[in-house]
Amino acid sequence: MDTLTTLLLTFISIVLINNLVFTKFLGICPYLGVSGRIDMAFGMGLAVTFVVTLAGTLTFLLDHLILIPMNLEVTRYVCYILVIAGAVQLVEMYLKKFFPALYDSFGIFLPLITTNCAILGLCLFINLWGIDNLLEAVVLSFGAGIGFTIAICIMAGIRENLDLADVPKPLKGAPITLITAGLLTLAFMGFAGMIR
Amino acid sequence: METNTQNPPSIYKQTLLAGLWRENPTFRLLLGMCPTLAVTAAVKPALTMGLAVVFVLLCSNIVVSMMRNLLKPHLRILMFTLTIATFVTIVDLFLKAYLPKMSETLGPYVPLIIVNCIIIGRAEACASKNPILISIIDALSMGAGFTISLCVLASIREILSTGAIWEINILPKTFVPWAAMRMPVGAFITLGLLLALVNVITAKSKSLQTQKNSK
Image (cartoon, rainbow over the protein chains, first blue to last red):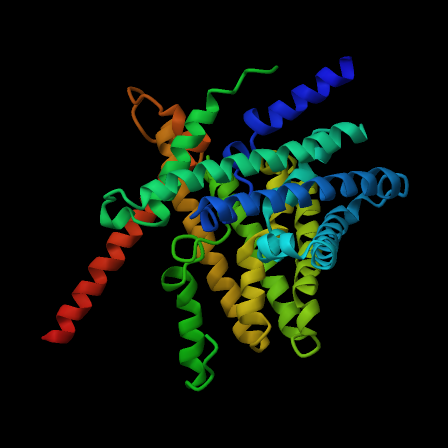
């Protein structure tokens, strides 16, 4: 029961309170680039969720089974980026072979994900926050993906409507998107202090 | 940048100037947004981050340029990332050893230089196609453009959020600090308004040029 509560709290905190996009500025590039249409944004969100869960789990295992026992922490970043690139490649190959329809719908986003800072950022945060329990690491990674999906979908919804609005000319495009994102972070700040 | 038909000195000059304004990575190409937003609450961390990126960009551009003839197309990105990750590890260890406080402030954003699109972007667009000298100039110019943009953003945010710059008070005591500027909101909105300003300036200079040409 106790572990279940902890896991639930971890999940809520990473989705709402420590949302990677709004409080840690991770994954801003796709957030600004892809979030023009809701269906694209949702596809990107799902792809990120999938890869981040896998990458978070794998890097946690790598850290605790290989790097720490063998005192190889210096090579941590190189190993992490290799694992992430490998995981993305694997997922891409697997989807192509077994789920071609799914591959067609979010295959284009997969190569982009390797350089999505949300993924590497989360793996580093798991390490920084001193998470020492596999289950917690998995929940945290999954929650981070869900948080990203929520953020990018909200943004896409707003931007679809923003297209119809009369925005001052110099603010068109990226500037207004950034300002909208700023206002969204204000809204998400309302969740701060809910836990701890 | 990829046109090698001009005489050499003008290529160098063009490359050098490109990063500062015409192809400024932050304000024009919108690359490397994470650190731009995350470390610009004050000028000190912003400058440190800028210099770290300059170092990594310079080293990775040199290495990539040296091995540009050996690269296989499908392994290209992987080789870039591994090169960059190595240099980022060096920077991270250096900061931990000599500037431990700064390293704590910057936190995970130092290792996140690995996935900074500016560096991979320059490796792909410039260093993998050009000889070493041009790659070095390109790295310095892009790095300088990035550092200056970070510092501009950071000074605005630091002045408005604390009334100080480089931790030295410059505004009178009666100034009420805008706490919001220190928070994510401040980062997003300041950058948005700066981009708008850049758009205005570009539009102005363009219309001036057309006026000149028509005369």
